Image (cartoon, rainbow, N blue to C red; front, side, top):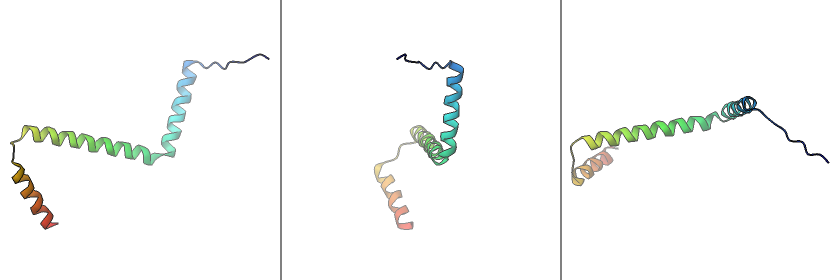
Length: 74
């Protein structure tokens, strides 16, 4: 019994992978949306941390005081 080996050239492989990816993204838009949202949140967090590092330092007491005031408001 002879064994046949399917050969696929690089261009066909790229087309197949691209087609599979597009199909998966179309079927799972919610997953793509979640990934994008998480990435944007991460970017926002990094920017906030960088801004905080450039700003003046505050004491733990000041931070807790602000948080407690916000908790009473909310």
